[in-house]
Amino acid sequence: MTDQNDITPNDAPEDVVEETQPIEDQPPTITDDRTKELQADAEKNLQGWQRTLAEFQNYKRRVEREQQDLKLKIALETITKMLPIIDDFERAQANVPENLKDHPWMNGVSLIQGKFKKLMDEYDIQVIAPDGELFDPNVHQAISMDTSDDVESGHVIDTLQKGYISGDIVLRPAMVRVAN
Image (cartoon, rainbow, N blue to C red):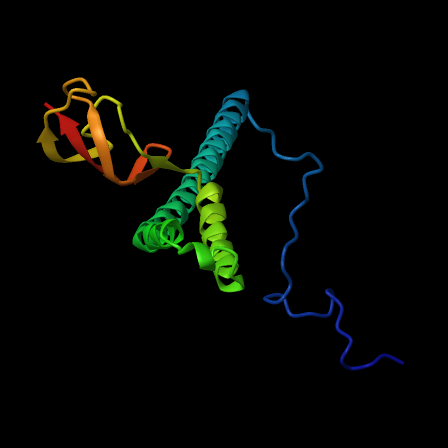
């Protein structure tokens, strides 16, 4: 017994039966010109990808370097604002009365001053105290020109306020008197 829903191609109406095409057993052939064209495209894409990767790596290094430079600049600006405080500590230490030199409170002040010194060492901050050196307008600020028998003309007679430098960055020029 046959099911009424089973239809075979022989039983199907003529307009429903599709003609079947023979399937080729061979894959389509690619010509040598097409192969060369595809290889050239692949090489072009590879070079573009490599160039983009190199540009991205350069960008990443540049951004990291800029971030480090910015962090250093901010730190040095902050330390520059603290230089008057450091000067005050040094003046206070230089003018301590003899009866207070061994006082525990003064020892605490010395420890605080030591922390400032450690911070300055961390950022390679050097003191500019140019007594007797040739005047350099890049790191010295002349307050006055005076005559001197002890120092040659154009040299620093006295440092009124120490300057500070970190690498090539002058945080504060030294205020000096210069010999005529």
